[in-house]
Figure 1 (tube, rainbow, N blue to C red):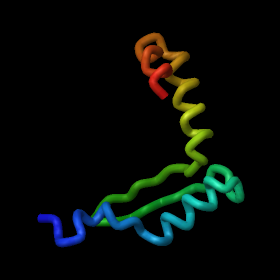
Figure 2 (cartoon, rainbow, N blue to C red; figure 1 turned 90 degrees about the vertical axis):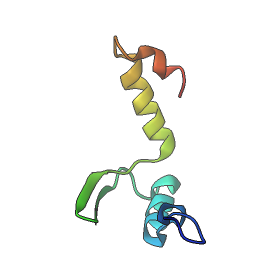
Figure 3 (cartoon, helix red, strand yellow; figure 1 turned 120 degrees about the vertical axis):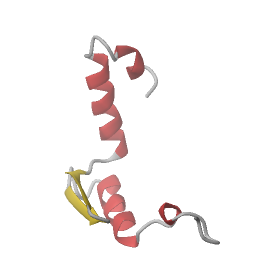
Amino acid sequence: MAGEHGPPHAQPDELLVDVAALVESGQSNQMSLAVATGGAVITGRLAAEAVWRQRVSDVLRDSAHLGEFARRL
């Protein structure tokens, strides 16, 4: 059950906020990241949102089955 201040995900982690700010500012391009929490590990590469949106749009546009979604980004 959520506490008085809402669910835990509503309170951003300061380190992740700082990392995201570095990526968005262009000071770090496609930084690798691994997050271990609650028995799960999430791995990937961080990219500025505009770069990510363009890449997703390109992949969707080139897909025979998903091309219609590229226009929604």
